[in-house]
Image 1: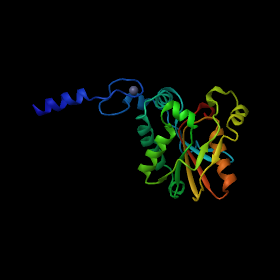
Image 2: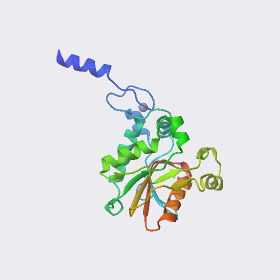
Image 3: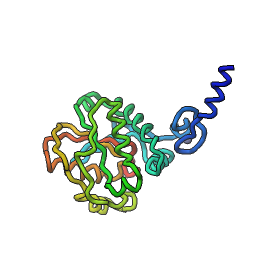
Image 4: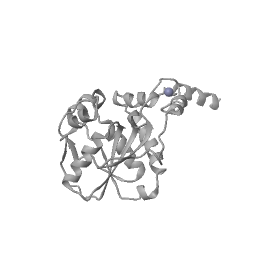
Length: 220
Ligand SMILES: [Zn+2]
């Protein structure tokens, strides 16, 4: 009788996949969606920009793209899911990369965008990531002072660079040697590079690493 009742409760409290809305038991994401993600090659698929090196977990297409859009459109619980995947990915990287006392910092959103959305999705992911990694978290070292256009509406690299130029400002002393900047999507790398450049203008001795949930097809 108890078993039947437990099964009944499971049915009532069954989750719908946050991406495709199919029923998925106690998970946030159904197996179909999860198995459809294209993961990037962590050993060979590292982006070395002049200012920053970036690691990305998945490919920004298909259901993963839909998931990131859903996270930005109100499905906040997806931040926990992506943070968990990012932790597994991070733990699979070499100790040489990971064994530093990083401060985790999100790419900051402009206050107007946070007001519109009600939250900053990169802050949600970064905070959860830091908790699980046992690392310090801060979201008040760097501020986005300029409201930039959406990067995916811009066609080429020079437009993206121009859009993001001078967008960030250091607002608190950076007294750390290592910062891990987390973002949801890596496209041209302009945003992460601009943040790294802003930090280095303030303090050249900071080692900066980037980590993103997904990377766009520009980097196939
Ligand atoms: Zn699904």
